Length: 488
Ligand SMILES: Cc1ncc(COP(=O)(O)O)c(C=O)c1O
Image 1 (tube, rainbow, N blue to C red):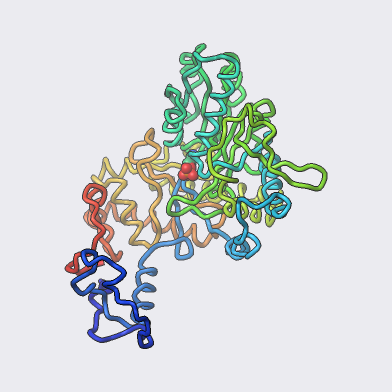
Image 2 (cartoon, rainbow, N blue to C red):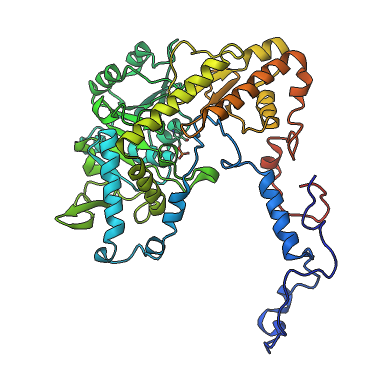
């Protein structure tokens, strides 16, 4: 077990030396007596090398995409190309100030303008706003567009947004935040929206419908045309949660199959950084007549000049973020799209789909996979019900054992409509060798469930930290080191 940096203390050891203090002012003259520390700060006395080794050791105990495979369904943990990181650190980007005059930031505006246009082209929408800074923020902004659309028509009675029970968890939360009421409908046995249930719930109060597509079961919802007809017949709008666009790049254009609004998750689709909650980017695309409601400003181009376009300010829903959204995240997505081009992007989706189907097929003998007879898109949902019913092993135990095998765990217990769910998404960036290693580990675990269930119940056994109390840290948050804890 690693020692804390305090336990590495060696009295008198130093990582630096100061030259003789020639500052004549006394501390007591600058800081009121009551704020002066009376006791030793208790900092560890260590050398520079001690510090470097300590933090390198901690970093290696951690898990990160450059270390290993993350089959984390829905979260799409794919490799972020290092060329993006190098290029966004360019002085030309970093020294910009958002208050600069337009004619001094023409290059930055050109990138944003092109990104807007490329995202519109990829999804088949008329116009894109880059302002929202996360997928859920995009959902909120898209729902506000729906609100503006109905307000402009005087449709004050349109208060309800319908969504299927396979929706991503952020969808209902965004609906409430945007001031609508959630109406949940069922999925059918094939994992698709239940059209009859939809018909039964649509009425004159329906403001819109929100569909995650591909949905959280990893299945492409094929009934978009029918859904759009039903929703449009009551003058509702149909919103696509496009966070899973990484499965349909160059294959389906949502704006051309009936959707009115969609958000993109640039971190999931275009490989911008994702961990730690962002900073992200969740642009939205809309059909032509909804452009006037988008946040201001958009980025415009007149002859050879780029400009901040406030021309629709009177009808716009306003601003949802300061300045232009997360500029450098958008630059990373721009580089990724330019680097791959149209053919490359299509291959991203094809490979993401092939990789997911390959794992699904290989594991289908060992785990219950509710929709294994339908090809999945970029991810699929397995279930630990066999293991639970026959051996009393929960999906949580399986996930913990996966850590011992050197992989990050998949997303578990989501979506809620599959019991003991394990949501697996390999992404396009993984090689067949890595997929095979993961498949072998999952098969070994299925075998261990039969032969040594206790091993799973106590897993993980090989990680630096063993099984933790999942909720203690939330209930008793204490991040202060009291000088006594022994273990990291
Ligand atoms: C389908 C889907 N919708 C919405 C979101 C929310 O995106 P964000 O975490 O950027 O807010 C995610 C997150 O990964 C997602 O997978």
